[in-house]
Length: 46
Image (cartoon, rainbow, N blue to C red; front, side, top):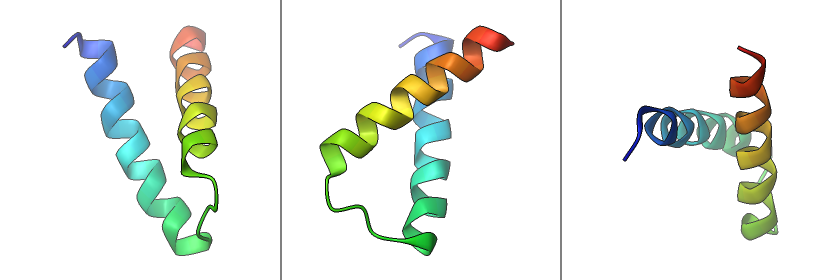
């Protein structure tokens, strides 16, 4: 696994935990896809 993949996984895990406190997402698949694109955009901006 590349560093970026590892970072994204960690980022998603953290964001997942935060989201779970706020609300349960009914569509987990879509939720994960959205977060992945968010993470990639964030990393691209760095």
